Length: 270
View 1 (tube, rainbow, N blue to C red):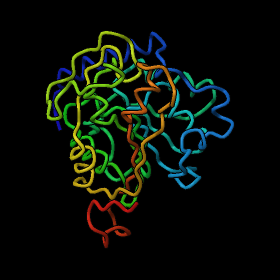
View 2: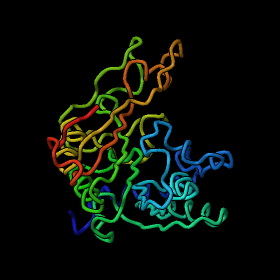
View 3: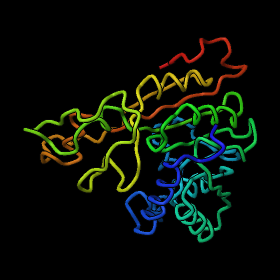
View 4: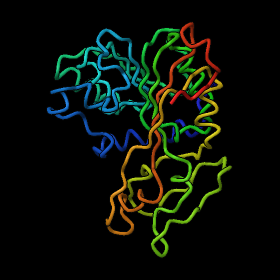
């Protein structure tokens, strides 16, 4: 764990503060209809068993006024961690408006030293690991703060999607960046739905996204690629690109404990 945040921390903190002030599409607070059946709106796959009431739940790198308030409305005891003060302010505003109790913590996902060991039953982690250069400390911190048998739901940008051109070339999307690239990706020249404007992003290999999770003490129980492909859509659009390159992967993992110790470490159960 880094004692002093790296430069990309401050860069991305400022970028997300700016996106929050601009009311970017990823900084839109939850709508009224999202609270009609809150858990169904954030757990369509049913990975949380249909009930989070009374669960200690961490929304990791998930500020913005959506995830935290919805899970709190579903009855969870919610903590939201984000590196952007402006994104966390959106959570506090929604919580106050709807009389929901939410704890907010400004921190980077790879340094959760202010949180207790073995405290959280559930960790919800939307797309954000692309903003850290090394995903391993993130997984290690999540494992430390979770109870044995706790559920970790995370979503990530697929390596091939980050490697590939945003703009099509003769109807296809070419690999532009190396798979083993360590430096942050260069900025894109136009607004798009693949990369967040002004942020520093990193390609993480599959051995890091999945292998490092298993090595940190998790059993992967389910994996899906959220569908964004739109057949017959215009070339160059997000829907068209997604027919060729899946943009995201979502995983459900469980922290190893007494109930999983009989299984091979890191086994994907399916």
